[in-house]
Image (tube, helix red, strand yellow):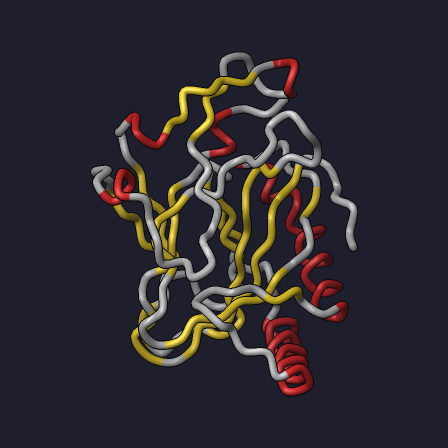
Length: 221
């Protein structure tokens, strides 16, 4: 049964990737980008990670699952991993990923990201907390959907194409920002109903992988 607290939880895994794995992932993506010519058309556009990277990241998730489950006990698997990067002047504004279809498995319990190459300056992941009722949709789910009775749902704010537009109502929500200057290789997991974003990159290039954390294994295509 899914509880509200895990959709708002945070968990770090400082040794999510070893140094050797991180360096290997950088080489894999260097090769992939050279071969495909892919460059993000807008800030934080994602690219499906190639198979060798998927293998490394899935293994890292599997060995860290017991740690992730301390804060997000309903998590059973990761989804397909994606690669993204941000360069100077780019950022990800505050938003909520939300739970797309609460009654249908696999359900998104949270997300996890891991940096493989840190920006020179800036690019820190952050979360925001607020007492404002504005983030909540008023919708409740319960046992029929697989949740604790009376579990509230936030609004869902899926990423817009350029990650630059934020609803006016969210910009006006009073909140407190918690910045997490985690180093490369550290996995940062956060519940699906957590307000979060990435601070502007000031110099260099931020390179990271991200995926959903699910309550049942997803069909991988």
